[in-house]
Length: 74
Image 1 (cartoon, rainbow, N blue to C red):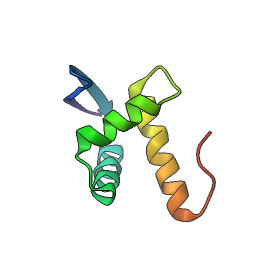
Image 2: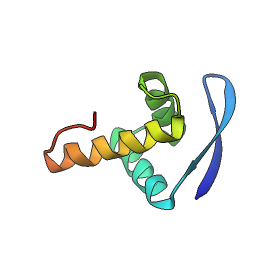
Image 3: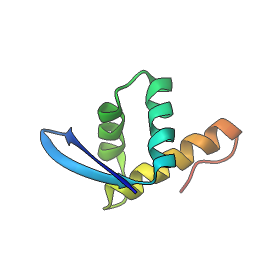
């Protein structure tokens, strides 16, 4: 697990993810032309789970499913 700290909505937070999820998240951010913090902020504001790390993993899963032409994670 890799733990990174960033500012979201004016407060500092830490997110622990597997390196593969960080790599995918960086690819998502690049594709959307967003900073990593901006992408995570977007995920944070639209999440439907209490845990931000889980919301990030689900967002990565949905992004890959969309790329493969599958359905989004529910």
